[in-house]
Image (cartoon, rainbow, N blue to C red; front, side, top):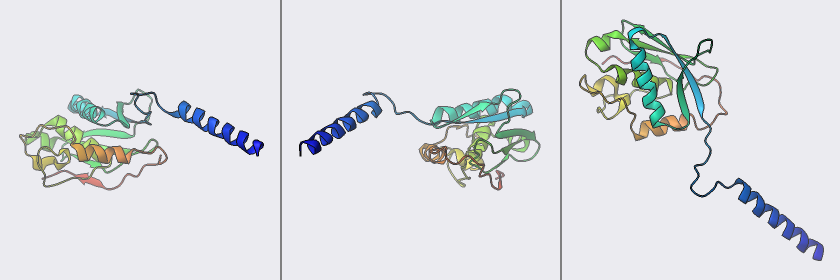
Length: 185
């Protein structure tokens, strides 16, 4: 009987010590796995600064995925190409090792749509978000239905939550790229 009591005490003490070791300090944020996705803007022409601003909008809004300009020699998961059509993108979510494309279409810019909103919207597709049309300006994924006066480039709470969910696990590392989403009105 004494042997069982000693064993239970040791097991209990070990569990307490382990829980104290693994528990975060009071007020400390829990550690979060972050997926880094590289974007290549070498073919984005006059839209490079808009792409950087769109990436920054996502980086400021979500915690578990980061969009980073690809250093020379690094394979990018997101390629950004300027062209004369409507903005469009391959629907993700893209994963490390995968690759999607954003076509930054000049047609929308020529019609007066905000370049930073276009970039953030198309990057949203790369992160796995579909269009939400029609929709208000407060919804980044409403795209062109927000109107040419809409300059909102910040994802709303449900858009942020969807991207956080898409990148909640690093276990899925393959690309799940799908169809090309064209953002014409």
